[in-house]
Amino acid sequence: MERRLAAILAADVVGYSRLMGHDEAATLKRLKALRTELVQPSFASRKGRIVKLMGDGLLAEFPSIVEAVQSAIDIQRRINDRETDLPDDSRIRLRIGVNLGDIIIEGQDIYGDGVNVAARVEEMAPVGGVAISGSAHDHVIGKVDAAFEDQGEQLLKNITRTVRIWTWARSDPHSSGKHDSVPPPERPSVAVLPFDNISGDPEQLYFSDGITEDIITELSRFKSMDVVARNSTFVYRDQAVNVSEIGRKVGASHLLEGSVRKSGSRIRLTAQLIDVKTGKHVWADRYDRELSEIFELQDELVHSLVSALAVRLSAAETERSLRRPMNSPAAYDLYLRASSLDRLYNANTAREAKELASQAVGLDPGFARAHAVLAGQIFTCGWFENTPKATYLEEALQAAAKAVELDPNDSFCSSTRATVHLQRREFDQARHYSEQALKSNPHDTWVWSDYAWYLNSVGKPEEALERLDSMEHFEPYPPNWHWEIRGQVLYNLKRYGEAKTALKRMTVTPFWVKAFLAACCGQLGEVEAAKTYWAEAIEGAPDKGDTFAHQLDVYRDTADAEHWVKGLRRAELDV
Image (tube, rainbow, N blue to C red; front, top):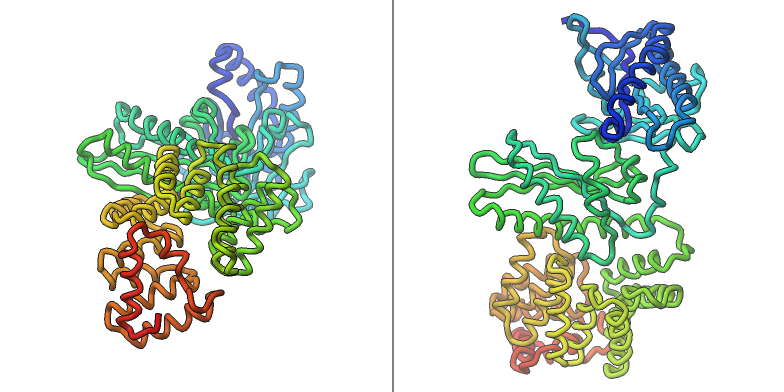
C-alpha cells in the first residue's frame, strides 16, 4: 500500500432526492453542466483531481490544502451566483468539506482515515458553504480569501475522536440555509430522525419505522417540550446527518437518532440525543431484548427509551438555563430555575424557587406549569417555615387548581394537584388527579413516584413497590424524590434495611428524611446511628418538637404513621 498526506475534498448535493423527484432529466443535465463547466476547471487549475463521483456527490484530492480550500470557496460562490435566477426549491446547492490527512492509494482510488474524516466534515458544512477540519485550518490561516468560524470540537459519526470544525458561509441568505430555517425554540424541542434498520433485512424496516413513530407519539405527551412532527423528520431518511442544519430546518434544540438491529432471537436498539447548538451528545444508551413478542417488545423499548430520554432532555435544558444570565425575562427560564431549586430541599432554595415561580406566573399568567411549580414551592416553604398548615395548603391548592384548569392534560400539573390533595388528606381527589396524570403521560417518571406515594399513603405499599420497581426498569437513574418514596414504602413493608439503603441514595436529605433514617435504624437495633440521625433532624426542623408530622399526616391509617414513631421509640428516643 502507498500512503501519503493529502488534502481531501468531499462535496454533496443538498436535497438530491427532492431535486430528482421534481425533474430528474433537468437535474441531471444541470449537475453535469456544473461539473464540466465549473467544478472540473476549478480543480484542474489548482492541480486537484476527482477521485470518484457518487451521483449526489464527489470525492477529490489535492496536493495542497490551501488550493483545496480555495477551490471549495470559489465553487460555492460561483454556484450560488449561477443559481439565483431559479426558483428556490429548484436551486442546486452543495455542502463541501475539506480535510488534511493520511490516505491510502490503490490504483485511482483513495481510502483511509483522512478520507473518512473529510466525508464527515462535509456533513457539518452549512448549505452553500464549506467546513474544514482543524488540521486543514491550521495551514490555511491568512492564505485563503475567506473567514472561517470556529464551531469547536465535534464528535463525528463513526469517528472515534473529536474533530475541531471551522465553517465558512456566504452572507447571502441562500448560501446559509437561513431562508428555510425555523426560528430556534424557546423551550426544548426534539426531532426524532428515522431509526436506521441495520438488520440486513429490508423487511424489518416496518419495525424501525414503528419504533420511530411511537417515540414521536409518546414524547408528545410531555407538555414541557415540543416534538417535531413525523413528516418533517422522515424526509431525512437515509441521508447523512448534519446536526446544525437539520436543527435549523425543523426548529429543534435536540436531535434523537438511533438504529435497530435484529439478530437471531434478539433485538438491539441504540439511541443518542444530540444538542443541536453544540453538536455534542447529551445522552446515549443501548437496549437489548429477547425477540419473543415483537409488538410487546416494541412497547417496552419505546417506554424505556422515552422515559429515560425525557429525564435527560429536561436535565440538559435546565443546565442550559442555569448557564444563562439571571436577568433573563422569559417565564420559561424562570420556571426552569425554580424547578432546579426545588430539588435542593432547604429553606433558602425553597423561598427562592417560590419567588421565581411567582415571577414566572406574573410574566405569563397562562403558563400552567409555572402555577404548578408555584403550588409545590408554597407547601415546601410551609414545611420549612412552620407556617400554619391550613394556610399554606389552601394557597397551594389554589395554584395547583389553576395549573390544571389551564392545562388538564399536563401530567405534571395533575400530579402536583394530587400531591396537594394528599397533603390535605383528601384521598379521593388525590387518587383522581394521580390517575389523570398517569393517563396523560404514563412515561413521566416523576408522576410514577408521586402515584407510588399516594398508594403507600392509602395502605397499598405492595402495589406502590411494584410501580417503583417497574419505573426503575425503564429509568435506571430516577429523581431524588423517588428514593424517598421507595424508602417509605419499604419501611411500611417492614424491610427496614432496604428502606435505609434507599433513603441513603438520596443526593439531598432534608430534615424529615433524617427522621425517617432514625426510625429505620431504630427498627434495626442501631441505636447510636438512630440518635445521630434524630439529632440532625431536630437541628434542621423549624419546629423542634415536630420533625416530620407533615409527612406522616398523609397516611390514611394512623397505624401506619404510628409505625414510624415506634421505630424511633425502639431507639429510646423521646418522641
